[in-house]
Length: 223
Image (cartoon, rainbow, N blue to C red; front, side):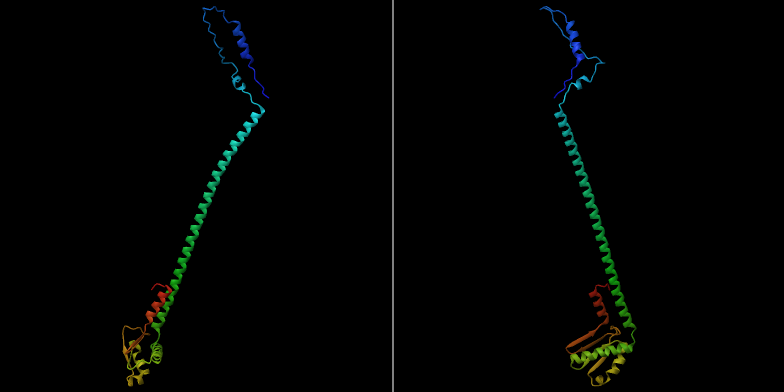
């Protein structure tokens, strides 16, 4: 159902113009001027001349709602993407931080491990170097007897020791020395607890420093 708008002022002006219209013959040129709207004329007449049905108004409302809803959904999607990006960035930062902490913990453990191994090796070296010559000689003799019993090398056997324990070893092996089964010599390059046993086709070396170095290398401790 439509509700047209009638411009009564325009109709009244048209009637007045028709009453004052000049009479013309066939040779006259008649100019009919259109009425000009005055400044004080109601300017809302043009806009009010448009009419809308209830169905059209409802359609416009639906279209406006749909457009607003689409724009709102688009803005929400953009904001959601931004939030997701920020979440991903935050998780990446957390992962990097955890990785850094784990690396630092691993380095700290490795450093403490190496320090403990180095300390243990240093203590062993210190104990060996401070051991009395009697104890060292007893240990060397035990090592020599073990080798001679197991290897049963042919005579003569050359036993090289540190100068500090030479006399003690010779005293303990005096009978074998008399039978020329062994000979005790000195090597200033050997450690106090070290010795070397040589015979015609073989040799055994006890090198404490080398053993400690090998243990240190095996355990990953710096020298």
